[in-house]
Length: 474
Image (cartoon, rainbow, N blue to C red; front, side, top):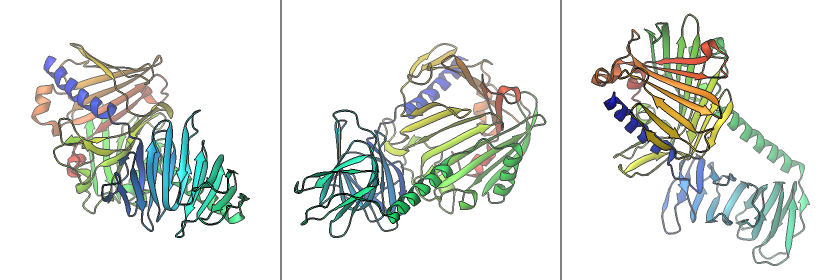
């Protein structure tokens, strides 16, 4: 029992350091499509930009034709860099932010500023001061600047200071030309509003597409699975006995492609469990740093990679996961994945944001948090600030058997996860037997919550390992 506890404690410590200690970046690249390049600083060369990349002061991002990038600042501001545009992140302190737009059209959605803080966007011919607003700056080949404000108020002036300052409000625009005095702001035309409407629709479309849906009925899940398995590159099916003595049919598959609503850099893993008296299912959408190649294994072998001596060509920049009994659900995931220099290993994959929901209620959504861990002879306690009441207790109810339990308290509401390793006949091995041949055993995860209303107030999932080994997932 003591040996098993020490092994699991070490594993949990590694996971905790991976999950909770990622560097908080000043800027995260959330989208990169087409040919997008970055200069980390003024003296460095141009390198490929990828989703999840971390940027800091003095970085420059540039898009080619038919290319686009979106970056998110740590204060929540969102900036969309359209084709043939260039943006310098000159200053990024808490008190002052200065961006310099060299060319192209860029959309700025700036978070509301606290008192005493400033945010400026400069172009070759204009400077704009913002307190929290939504606007675009368009710099043409002659360095002429057009400002359009969709929400809020922008204080705008010529870069050389001549002509005075103008306050440009919602649905107004104005232009700045190098050798001419600026004219007063004018109202949008119908075409301007049409462009804005189309832009919002596209953003809403992308947001809906990214949402993982765990609210489907049993019939809807089975219909989805039947269609997607026809397109799956890897799939497995088997019938086993679960830890409670129930016969369960497991169907698993890995699929990609726009036919199933995925982007070129995404794959989806689905696990379906059918028992006589219940139905449970799981899905995971993994988003990679680049387009998944024809040989999917080149990417999937790095799907669960966290750190090591070899720099991976592919890695996940985001993961969206969920489990459901068709009545209750949990959803969890991460974003902002990037490769950083490790402490014990040369390379490490870290994320900048994590979320966890129960029955669509958000328990946590934000930057990684550092837990305070205490290891006892028979349990492990993690106190996580900001995470409900913050207590996560790991115990081992069956002694040396491969069964661990995590109990989490959210302000008096109890949530638990039980994990079992078991053979096809429902037998749970001891740790020594398990370590002789780990891939021989299935895994069963049982999620329980006070406010679940489905069968036995739990989600109960059995997963077989063969699909993962066939697909090269490590």
